[in-house]
Picture 1: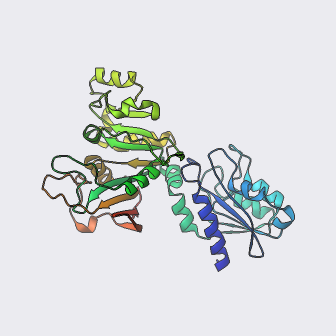
Picture 2 (picture 1 turned 120 degrees about the vertical axis):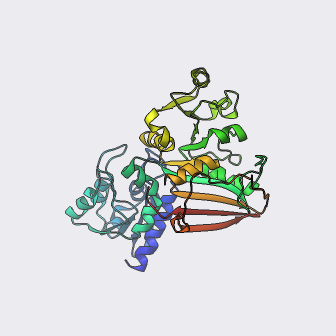
Picture 3 (picture 1 turned 60 degrees about the vertical axis):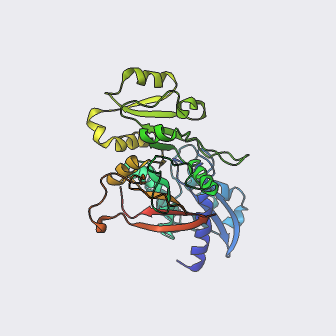
Length: 372
């Protein structure tokens, strides 16, 4: 990899990231066309079902310039007909001198065929330039493809002494307005938001995305409540706002049937967790969401649900908002309950952590250093 390769692939990756929230369950892809170290054209996959990055970039190019160019693309060009024609055929028609690909696409209909087609047509192909960055960018896509499970993000706001609510259960507001804007931006890219029934009853949240005036969320998330006994009230804000986005109540066969019917009559989807799955109810819910091709899922707590998620190794990424407040008290509510780890050496490790100040709040985001 030359410094020039790293520069141009970095630009392609930055372009690809602009599709976050709009292209899923497809991967984010960026493409850059370069001639004599000069940018000729660029593009990225902008929305699900729309033109792919290569089409966006090449459609603005003089074909004669492409013949002397290097095309940088963050993912192997597709070689099959899906919602759009194969991108590899377009590249073969334009015949660039060289194609640089960050990573091979593991999707079975592609999986090396696009790379081989280019080479079979005497186009130089180099693979693996900024592979790690490309895999990180599309980690949710790769996880869904390999495991059938969505990428799971844990989010919580807490005081400096680690409380998400006082001993009297008061939690409004811990974080400041700037942090809450970031949370809504995060929600706007989610396929689903999950909470437990304890949080639903205590906070009566909406779980909708509220962005600044004029902004439109990339997605409208399914609002999922893990509620084994069917305790969610039809008068809750979640049910009363059914017009604003789907509500799924994951409950058990033992729940009060009259309550469950009331929720269904109010417009909620009722998801029955089979008896044999109750001990791993959250994993069952995530598998169900994966089957529906949900790519990114946000767990907003509370402590019981997040604790279960960490105990079951279901979390891939975290967003933690820390406010300069101290509430104290043995009865204050912690963000992550569950069984936890018995040894410090077993603690989940964070990596690729970013820290930013949002006014007087601190926002920490990070990946977890383990696989699901």
